[in-house]
Amino acid sequence: MRLPRPFRPRRPSRRHLFALTLSWLLLALPLAAALFLSGSRSTVLAGHDADLRPTLDGYATLDLGPYLPSFRLPTGKRLGADIDLGATELDSYEELIQRYAFIASQPEGQVAKVRATITDLAVDSALLGALGGLAAPALVLLVGRERWHQLAHAWTVPRGGAAALAVAVVLGTGVVVHDEDEPPVETGDWVPLQAALPDLDIPAQAASLQVESGLITSGTRRLVESALDTYRKSLEFYQELVDAAPALGDELRTPEEGEVVGLLVSDRHDNIGMDPVARAVAAAGGATFLLDAGDDTSTGSSWESFSLESLDEAFADFDDRYAIAGNHDNGDFVVDRLETLGFTTLGGEVVDGPGGIRLLGASDVRSSGLGSWRDERGITFAEQSDLLADLACERDADGDRISTLMVHDANSGAEALERGCVDLVVAGHLHVQVGPTEVTGDNGRVGYSYTNGTTGGAAYALAIGSKLRRDAQVTLVTYRDGRPVGIQPVTVRTTGEFLVGDYVELVLDEPAAQE
Image (cartoon, rainbow, N blue to C red; front, side, top):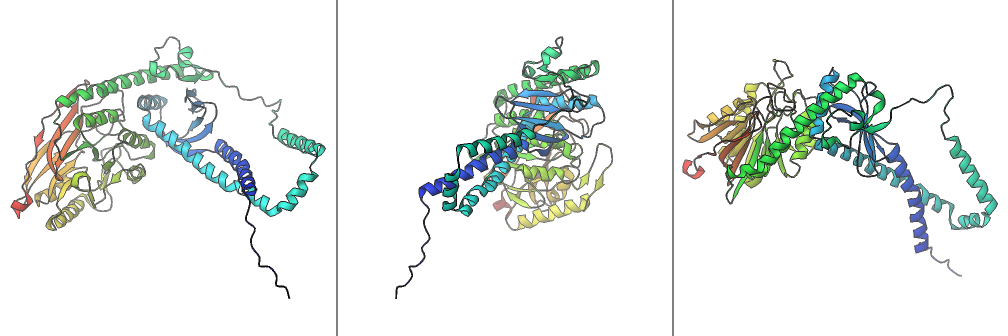
């Protein structure tokens, strides 16, 4: 009796594998491209709800709605984007145009967001295309080699011509035929901004900007003229500060070996113009990490995300960036967005910072809009102060002393200082510098309180404008062996001049001597 031969699966040949891979590519690539070019993404851009759609015309086109002309800017590449701006918070076109001009003077954060959004859409389209493309090799395997071989022999030139004709007819039926009774909407021609407004002085940075001429009226002309004025003043004012910042190195203390320096900012209130200035000061002073004491926005609304994205872009090369929300960063949006951007947000826990620093911080429990009112969320201001002090003192008793307690209002850290449980409390909120002030705690330990002025140069909660509304400030905080040893403020005057403060040494007692 002859036994049947055991079944052994047939290994696919290289030719077969190549055919399967080729069939996958032939379907996956065009499918991914079609999904990408027909897709769109919703985001918040320049203070608006916005829809982004990729194009292949090489322009970033900004649609401002039915009452303002559209603008476009060459990307320098084949890939472009159509950006349709939707709802926003402002009520007048004058305020809106001023915001556009101000953001355009510091566009890096918004450009990076558009690029990231388009990239995200491309990645998703590629993944979906790759998955959809698996249908092709699946079909090849399902039909089988023998049947494909039969189909190949049955394929003749007449049949191929008939198939091509059928495909052409199907594609032809997809062409949109315009109704003679419904003429297409007429749009203006794209012309350089200088050609559309020949008697205006267009800044060199905007020379490549094009405008849709069909909606250029006397009213929009005045708005564009006002926007260009804001754009020019803002660009010149803050760029001159960036250019002058490296010279501050002669006045700033140079960190010694074994020291690390952090840059403290607070109360930016949407003034993205100061972000590259703050980064330039950080470079001049040798700062390598960021401390953000809150009030990056004026209302905490999602339309203000451009402010957070600008700060992210300015300090993108910093590995360590710590932030809390202020009383004007109302709601959860600011903290959530900062975390998405890669910031470490402090929420009542101890964090190990660079150089052995122990950081503790918490967002302000109060919320504010642009009015004069405040309310308290969850716990009260006094309760938060006690909780932070309890946590700091517990860590101090365990020999894990807090180097820096970051709060928005220095009063939140007063209790921890009075108990002698922290080395330094840093804050903002007041829009003026206070300290550094030495405090001897109940246990005999010495700590300091320091309030940074407004980094955005804000008058109350408003900072957007072509120039500073009041003096702006950042502060360099120096650490050695994980403890703060010095503070040096840098102020930017409304006249566009730097004022470097003295380096103030923080004299702290040694833990061993205290014990």
